[in-house]
Image 1: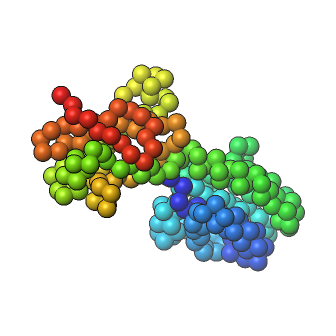
Image 2: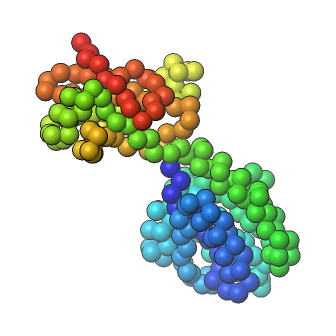
Amino acid sequence: MLENIFISYHFDNDAKEMAEKVRRLVVSHNIKPVTGERLGGESLRQGVKEKIDECQAIIIILTNREQGRTNNWVRDERAYAEGKGLKIITLIESGVNENGMFNERERLRVNTNGNELPILELSETINFWRNSLGDVKKLLIRPKDVSESISNSIGNNTIRYRIWKSKNYRDNMEPNWSNIIPTPEEGGATIYIPGIRSKDLIEIEANVKNTRWGSPAANHNVIVELKKKN
């Protein structure tokens, strides 16, 4: 799920205006922008690493500065984000020597002085990230008596799920199970499963009072109906 995007840029006047436009775009997608101030060639601090760890993607702003000083620290943040598996896109100002750091699929060109940002292209990239990372799926357990039993004894009733993605059923691969703790809400036991895309199928199993319940793999919409299993 795409919740936070780290915006990497040098904290000087040349990049701040560009970064502010990017920040506003990120906010417009209902995503939290995260930044970490670090100047010059200073090493990648633990605090910055922790902020990157909170994010699922990074937008790098590479501006045209004296003697290419931007490259000294942006490499560190990009390498760290890449090692964490974050989605990456870089805004590269005209005249910057990128030294082959960024392939065509993860960079957007910005005209000299950063006056015109490729806002539409960047917005499309953010939307693509959101779709590829999926969203949180809220599922209400039914039948009602089973749901109430789960809610009344959360610790004693195990619920697990597995996600059937297109690659699973295409390649005949069985996905792994994951345990999940339900929330005892007013309507009954509810589970929240992250990273679900529109075509994913979810299979649920529950052990309630020594009886196994389960659902078929399906694209559930709000309510998941469990049936007794042998």
